[in-house]
Image (cartoon, rainbow, N blue to C red; front, side, top):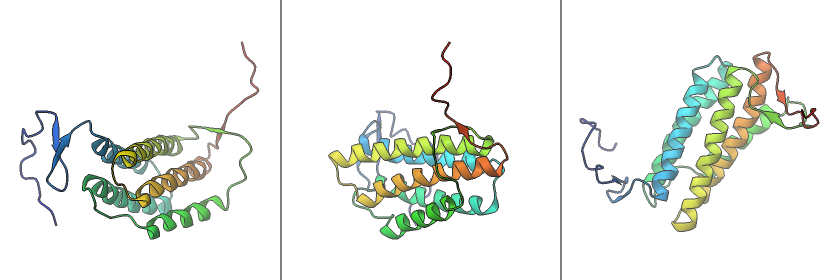
Length: 184
């Protein structure tokens, strides 16, 4: 296990730099810091979903995903480190298929909403999409394992399906985009 912080502030970042997991330092605005920082933000957004009333199976799944996101943040924080593998992506796909199987086919776009848990899940989904974009930006400049980007892509898809599941479980139903609404 790595070092534990006994003192929260170190003053080493006062110059606008931060330490990476390999001991090197980089700017706090570096693409790598943006990528793992946004993964951390996504993890926090999932924590907000977990603070809502959820079916037990969704709660267990999202808690496991939080641990994997923490691993993914570590992978992005330590250049050359591997924490997410193909099996992790495949597990997300299995969950996606299982939850999507009972949903009716989409015929219209869905707006964020559908009850508290679903709305929170929509926020988490959009933050995961941003994390994916940040990981792609990093991958254009530095080495990023493709599993990291694929994991974030599948996770955002899974969260979308969970938004639909939660909207139905909450009794609110999905909020359908009214593309032919009357303009005033």
